[in-house]
Amino acid sequence: MLDEPEPHCLRDSAVERDQMAAQDVEDLLAQPIRPGAHLALDAAILARMRQAFSTGLVRKACGGCGWHGLCSTIAAGGYRDTQVQRPALPGKR
Ligand code: SF4
Image (cartoon, rainbow, N blue to C red):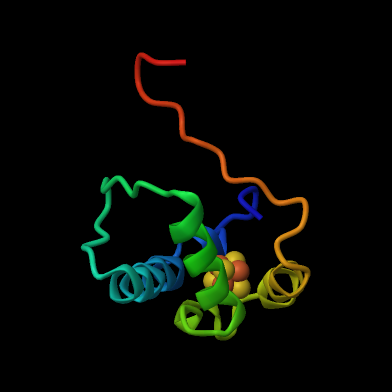
C-alpha cells in the first residue's frame, strides 16, 4: 500500500518488474518500449498482447508478484469487464 512507510511499489523491485515487462512487450511488438514512449493500440495489437499475457509469453515480471493470482484470473476470464483507457494528454480532454 502506498500509505506504508516504504511502499513496495516504490522500491527497486517494482522498477525491475517494469523493466522486465517493457522488455517483454518490446520483444513481442518488435518496437522500443521506453519511459515516455507512446504505444498506439488497435484491436489487433491489444488482442495479441492479451493472448501473449494469457499464455505467459509476456509474464517474466509476474514471478513472485503479489497480484499474480488476480491478473491470472482476469486473463483466464478473457479480460471480461476490463477496459483500456486513453491517457489524458496535457492540455487535452
Ligand atoms: S502479476 Fe499483474 S501486477 Fe504483477 S507484475 Fe504481472 S501484470 Fe503486473
